[in-house]
Image 1 (cartoon, helix red, strand yellow):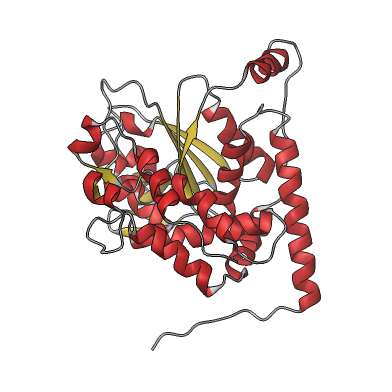
Image 2 (image 1 turned 135 degrees about the horizontal axis):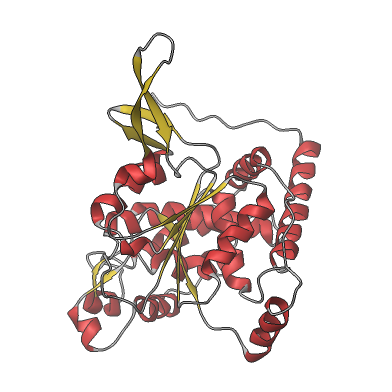
Length: 341
């Protein structure tokens, strides 16, 4: 028999925690913008991922500050940051770590010692994750879901909190290995980085071509981030809003009787149950970030595309008609309006 534990918190203490959450969130934005110009939507989605405890896949063209954004977020949060540059010759043990034989200089006794890999961090940047073979990509699967890794039959827990922020380049397909659907489904968001406006590019040039070095200051701790994750899960969501989230996810499955015609025509596989879980969790985080203590239909709709775009698989009809997952998902949102409040 399962047991549901609902933490009991004094109302005044809860108000204090919510106020602290808002204060830290506003300061994160201010600190990040000392280094990163523009990209408000991208920064919001990365923050949601951190508050939810989910992983983010960041897709963008070269030079769009993907790596800089991840490193800056780690600096602001005061978390341990490590980076893996994925290459075709990278091995799974290069990520997880491995056992080595060490000899005691006095007794000459040899023992196995585990040497931790770069995966033992709070924020892990998996740079150009699609440039390494599936065998090595799979080394991340257990850590992303279970927050642990297994080496030679022994299980090792990873530091908490643990976030994987992976980047990939969408235009260079030579020598790349597309991520399998099982691994894509473990990412909360597929965040798309686009070019900046002309004014924003001018601000970047002014910021980066002088002797001044832009740097963000740490403003929180790992323990506080874990507290924020608990606070997000405590945020209430109405039954009608939760049902709407599930309805939108189920609408991406062509076998569902209520799915629209565009899904039946163009989609081979729709969103998983994990998509509905992430959609609700992310909406809770967004509600708190917007100063509300309840989830609205707007939160669900705003996060629907970045959470579902990497979870639906289109068929050859969509490719022939030059449709993208975003195109299909926008149509679903139009055909499935939110109920009246």
